[in-house]
Image 1: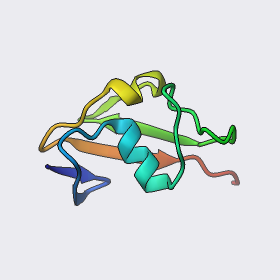
Image 2: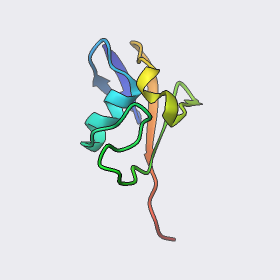
Image 3: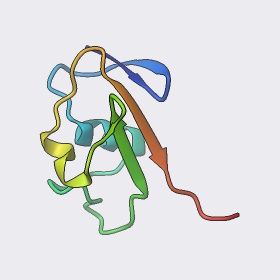
Amino acid sequence: MNIKLNGAHHTVADDASVSTLVSSITGRVLDHKGQAADGGKLGVAVARNSEVVPRSQWSTTTLADGDELELVTAVQGG
């Protein structure tokens, strides 16, 4: 299925969830609560179709064809 991620077109599996997408983009394994399985900070937020998806719902939020997602990463500095 096709989605738009940060303005670019991407193809994902039909059963992909927000958690699956974040894991593939960051290269990190996530637990069912959306936390990095290695215990480190993830520093990522996700909006789907202009609505923020709470981290606790990443694994249960299934993507749909045509969804528009924004994935932002926190950076430190000024």
